[in-house]
Picture: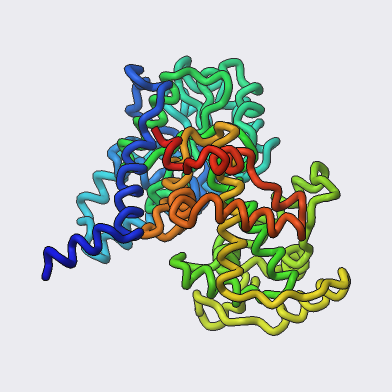
Length: 446
């Protein structure tokens, strides 16, 4: 019975997807730039910023046995950063995961200061300050002056142009993007963003850091959002469109949860903080093509100060420490008013249609990311979405899912939806080419 059942399970799409994920994870660190290239020394690390990301990166480095120097702009901010780090380790002591003596030993490798000069001798510095280009440029100008020759200068930016950051220094060959995912001490994914002028041994050092920290690295090219966040923007917009067109955020979240995600997109927006997306939308507003559809509903919530879990309200209400959130009638009223302003004819969405649109948007943008060589191979997109964005592992990732669904079916969905919005649903050239050749994404992985 066990033998028969084993072979039955072996033939399932879930089994093939798990196997695909296993090998995709092991392939993501194999890139041509670092073949037979030795990484630079990586014995000490500097971290700029003690907020959520900075403290998470600090903990990940300390756990890997790397001495860390944390720098903050003033003593008050530094004290907060130290507390962020200590809180995690004190919890480990309470849970019995570490002893007090082990934590004392870890803290002996943790230096805290407001003086940038303390970074003069470190092998690598990771900047994790506010996601604003001018702020980061100021930091990089300082690092260029104080960090030793040959020290690696890394930015933890999740959207911004690393090439632009590199050019404010006298050594763009030393500048790289290291996009950690929050919380950085727990999340496995590390997008290693490779700008135009970076040296191959710096890229190798980024991959070496990932190995030391037990992270899963994925090489990413430079564009707004790199691999993961660029694709997220597209299917996030698709969720906003469906919400404006007739589905509630709660219906969309349920469909995505039932598909296998740990939470739906609107729960995720609330968890991440609505103000982060709002700041990005405002930053991009001057460059936005007026022909591209824009949904105002998230902005209306932010204007009320409803940024999600941290403010107790977002798309959901978070009363009495309820982290899952409750449906909010006031949000539904705001959605209704915005629909009326545009005079929209509402669509009744089934769960199946929500998934078809959501996945079509995700797969189409992912195909463009591969076509433009932002990702080296489709399986790297799968690794990114599996380890950074909660894509259900038993489905293998969006590219593997597209292959099992059928690329011809994906293209058919895109062409059907293109009649509604020709710009948003324009099929990727890569999907068109693959369907014409009768091959799939898997054919590009080697």
